[in-house]
Image 1 (cartoon, rainbow, N blue to C red):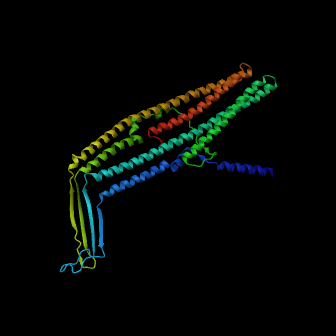
Image 2: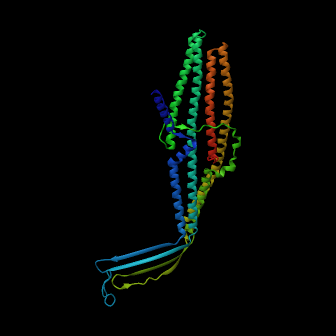
Image 3: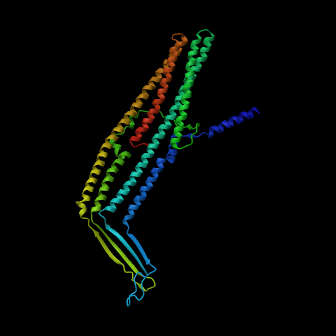
Length: 427
């Protein structure tokens, strides 16, 4: 019976472990992509722009219009006249059809199509920009959770060290080799680490809740993160000259599209003051119902040419000057934005190299702190130093370990940020 209960408990524990949700970084990003409202709206905006492109393309085809009219009344609309209308006319019908093909519209149709294609490109660029932003934030939040998990392991490791020291000192106390207050000093340190573990645990749940809400899943305190921070390596091989990737970044593309859009808007407005030409074919029938009066449908071809004249020295002159100013503003924004993007890339690169230097220094410090703790413990056993020196050495090691964990995650975050600003987020 006892063995059966043990087997049941083990089976329940294994089932619970299997039921825990496991998430890799890529899985987290995929979920965020499928749930994020901004990405959904970005996809809809792309569809909206595509319909606008199709609508602009339809302007190349002929237009066909049909009209119909029937009039009737209780009294004659046209009184009867001897010899002409023996009886009055109390109804009238008219039907017409007209087909028209624009031959030239001052370039308006071509420009409208170019503008619609540009809007489509802008919507696609913005959608990619949103995805990269969601990817970056997801990665940062994921790494923050990993950092807290590593910090917890650091505190737990140091607590185990102090627990072992506490047991040794209990034997020293029984043998009369130390005073009781030294044992109490270790107890205080252990309690402080227990409190630190509790703080990290609570903070991790808060960060996990924020992470779950951001990627769009139900909060589960038992979520297991399967990825870890890879080994930190010298980033010198990752450096990219801003000039080589600047034109490929989403921000630069949007600035450049802004200039193109203003230029196309100017062409579109100028077309309002250029001649237009169109060919058409129309025809109509009219008559009176039940009176035997009506016309025969006869198609008529027509050509229309319109030449605006006064617009060039009136309103149009000033509107086109406005458009030129708008183009200059967009061009200035492009130049200024280009400089700002270069600065952002360089700043991000320096942040990355600084993060690597900080990690490298802390790695050396960790070796020194570990050796110092070992020497301090040997000296304490030999009576060459006191407990305070040993506890200080342990605290220095714990602090260095904690700083190293932060530095490792900070390097990974800076690396992701550098990839983001250089347009290499998917690499």
